[in-house]
Image (cartoon, rainbow, N blue to C red):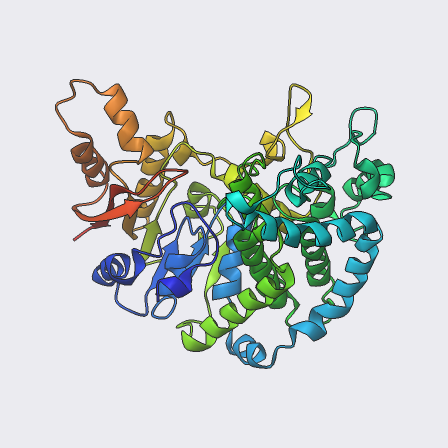
Length: 477
């Protein structure tokens, strides 16, 4: 079932470890029918696997993760029956078409050019190099060169003077270029302004093609247009938005995340981008939607009382937190392993959920290449900070122990920030970092066991390398 659990391209996804390693440890700690809290749910892979045998609570501080979890986990018998008779086109199509038609009027010429150029770029660069014409040999400019020049205008952004920067091809993007500042200001004042255009205004030609951006905006508009009188509006909203997030993640012309867009200087990169910008987002959305509905049917949820939260780990478990009155048998903690700020890798997905036209971060007076929201808007876990990671672990472990909740922790002794920081600071320490890691849990629990699994891992541009994943099982006996 591990492949069917995949939703987003996500750092640290546990799909390879769920079937026997994690499921087995959970089963050793809690009998089927108990309640398991997935404290840092990410894509919800672990929570979804456990949901066939346990009541599951899923939590993540990032809103896109909470939406994904809700789409896959939350619903009673009435919702399960509704999933069988759901008509997405009836729910979405009219509002989708209305928004798409309005956005098309923003840049009709650019859309025509993109539709003509992308297949030509793919055909041209898909040939062996010796068969390609160069600009000097061709009577006209090659498709690759024309597309590079075309997207030189992108991304559009407003200068301090309220003007979009001028390029030789800026006129191809009229009337949007002339109206950009006015359109953006109106939507920052009122994000519900129609037509929805956040992806079109922010990310066209960055992480998505032009038409892709319009389609994402229009699906997002249609999701928000589901009538408040629909008794299943909340469930439909999470379902459709979860499917849209999945479609965006697997269709981006970035790499496997949104840290920065691909450069188009090398032909191989341009070919990869052209292929991905030719993907039909609407088709991918309905494919993702079918997958979620199929999962509900093929892997029925054990409990109609699953819940989803959007807090930090410490906030959720605190005495006055949102789970203060909730009964939990086991907490599964899979925190971020590294100092990478995860929000930088998934900021576009978070923005699709919030859909509030955020102010973008600038460096040296220029909007960053990755077009991140300002740092104050981006969550960073204490597990990603060397000076706070031990405190973050101790906070969660102590709160679980105080509430008599069993604890299962996923981590890596090789790449985990906590052990790496100990190695750097503890030269001459007689206690090895792995022993110190176990000792941390033994400060709070009487019975602590570590299990290890070797994996091949491919990081950001890395070739496969062997890493160890550990599970730490904690209980009082």
